[in-house]
Image 1 (cartoon, rainbow, N blue to C red):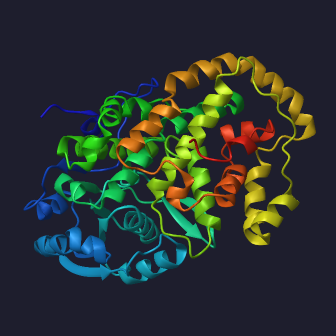
Image 2 (cartoon, one colour; image 1 turned 90 degrees about the vertical axis):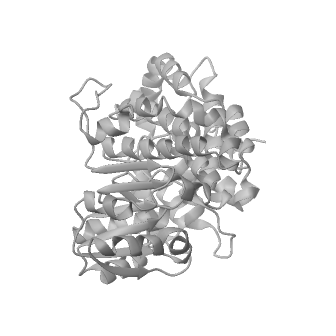
Image 3 (cartoon, rainbow, N blue to C red; image 1 turned 120 degrees about the vertical axis):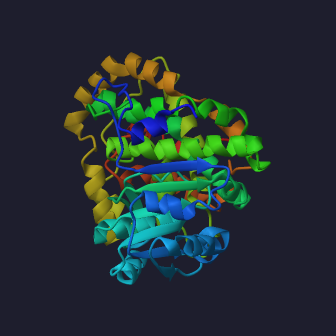
Length: 435
């Protein structure tokens, strides 16, 4: 088999496109095969996990793969099944429960996708224990990242977490996953361009450190994924391999950068807002389904601003601490204000910031256009796979979605096109998804 960039990263021999030393990641094995049947124990053994092994699953992932993994790894160590409830949440309370249940184990084996992987990697970090993951669905890009998305006291945050010792993907299991989870993975992959463009904007305007490596890693696999989205839904294993590689490489890009910048920008802030403020009885949606819709909004917003010959004219940030606390409540509002205040424009900031924006505008446009995938093409790709493209499809139409677009930038000190549009008075007209 021809050695590719995933293996080069594992071997710590990937040439840094940004001009640094050879790059590597702290992961021992990444295996993507049509079937892993009969090889599960060897995969775990190769990552040096021994002793008491906590095999963590929920009812759905246990049926998909969990029971099979527990039986197989009994030859490697003492298996302690950890059975989470139906539809567990990646929140602080569940992390506490998982940490208590696995405290006396030597390692964790996550069997699942987004929620279970995040819970295990964060619990493993708090317990200073290794973990591996047997992925059950191509629903998100966090399998190889070194951060976990955990909701704490109503505020969704990204926390440093343990990188898995091994990531094991059985493409036949992926292909058998519920269609929504496959569509969600495509949705989570669709934001590469909007995240890169937001990061480039921050780099040009605020001198935020930027790296090209995460995007060079994806350059060979993304085009094929965008060309054949409908093949994913037919169970085509070659298409599923492209999606799996894209998700793995996206996570590796985050690991290389030590943060989520290359894969989570304005589109994820909008999605996070929806998670935070949606009513409790709202229909359940998947993270990647939401990102599919919010990516289209960000791509349209970015394209609208970038196609102008002149940069937008910014004014002072129109949002005050009082506004945010009134919107989010005192506790979450205060936390949001501390984030927004760091990037807000005061009246004294406006003139020098506009001058910098004008001086950088041509470079911003050139770099961002080279990274862009037009929002209409993204919409066509998502629609071809049956993925959501409208707020109603993620139970977030009306005021909920409009408020998400208007207020998402208040959640985190990460400068994106939401901030540029907000301070230019342009956010209101983008407060709906493309039609």
